[in-house]
Image 1 (cartoon, rainbow, N blue to C red):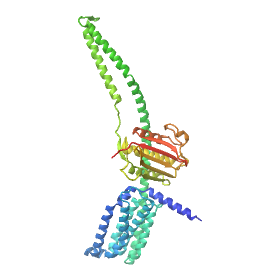
Image 2 (cartoon, rainbow, N blue to C red; image 1 turned 120 degrees about the vertical axis):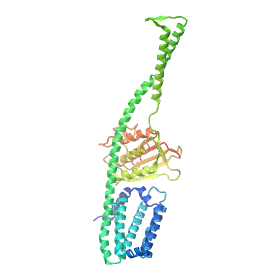
Image 3 (tube, rainbow, N blue to C red; image 1 turned 60 degrees about the vertical axis):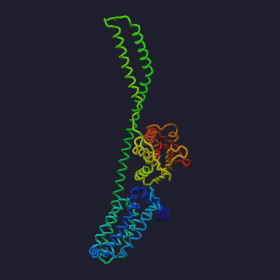
Length: 454
């Protein structure tokens, strides 16, 4: 016999898994104030046409007042939801529950129209209901493991069934209802599988790029050391050239007024001019090499808005680790937080994904169940700070002392490239990465980034 508390815990875990699979930005864009205003006007116009237009009245015959009453819960909930969440980038758990109720009311409205219409018009509305449920299944990632919207759709169909005009509508509900639920679950499952495949491809691409970056850094290091040795000879070369030039000038002065011939029958004055010209060309080449050696080669830092990037990382990593509760919190108020990174969005996204993935994986034997990402502006320096904490096993002492080394990992099968590459990329942009363990034993990473001011 199962314990009621265990059932509630499983339901809560399933609901969290479902919310983490959502594309919050896409959901909030679809539930904006503008779209709901347009939908309200469209619903009123369609109900008026279905009730009073001569041709449509024969096909549909939906009473305007009753149709508007069925639409009222959907329109009221949708407009209130859009106003409450205007300007937000994150949905709280109660917001997701509200969203489920709003989508359920939309499905109820369409099912009620199907029940109230004449049979010919009901088939037309049935196709609209089928399309809408399929669209919501894809948008909200409805699967058999997270069937919250599918349950809402089933409730909406059952609630609208008593409004049917005839027994023939019962047959229509018997066909369209299962079809709508199947389409909702199928497209939702397909969307989740597509997201996972895309996340896996991104992970593999990031791993390859990390290896390439590591190799490039080693090559650049060797080149920099060689270039430093070459440039170190500059003073010696300059001194030698200066001495040779002075000697040539003195020889020229000593040879003035007397025509001297060097062995081989050549004029001394001609030989001195040739020597001075050769020394001048050598000096010009050395100056040119020195200027090229000091020239910085690389991309300029680009501004990156932090909040949407962190939400995107949360969504992509959440697909790979649905049982890990990943939260993102950005300091409210003030101008949007923007970092300056070489390589722009691509670089910062790679850094954040590496670090959040490391937190989820832990030491390979035990990973984290909660990961929190907090971004804020330091009150004193004004620099941008991102703190990542988890409840995993934390860092072993060997990884807390000194700089991060390549190929050093706490995981038995790890290559140690994630943390190492992230720190290299941060340093290249003028940032820093600090590592420590929390008092509870988990890991804490503090990223300090150059900030782009508006």
